[in-house]
Image 1 (spheres, one colour):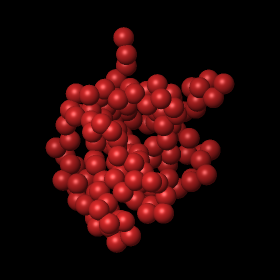
Image 2 (image 1 turned 120 degrees about the vertical axis):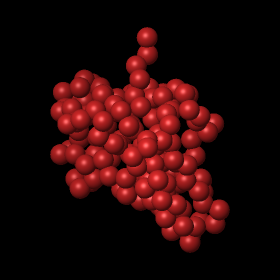
Image 3 (image 1 turned 30 degrees about the vertical axis):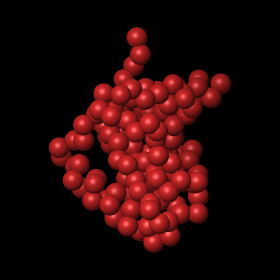
Image 4 (image 1 turned 180 degrees about the horizontal axis):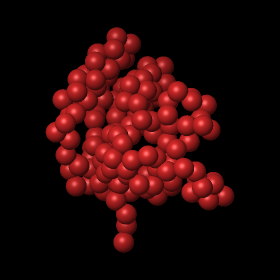
Length: 145
């Protein structure tokens, strides 16, 4: 029922619009370039990197001091749920269950800026969580055979 409802929501304006997901744990095993990652449930993402980093770095939430920021570079199945979201300013989108992604190289245009944003977030997080770290992983959506 939820999957059917999601399919009726509007597509995002561009399949190349960068999307972000902050995880309050480390993705294990650490993905390497070329790995395929399948997201089992619905996956909530935002169009705002800082919102995703803020979610990932909440010190009082999550059991791990190691977190992950995922950047979605190419996608086609994400649907816009911003008008339905409790966080309307977050510009939220949702991937359906079973969405598959290939881990890819960092993009040449923003990798340095993304890395600096992650380093700043790690510094802030370490004020409350000693040994904190955030992995930055870039992916693109793929489809199974």
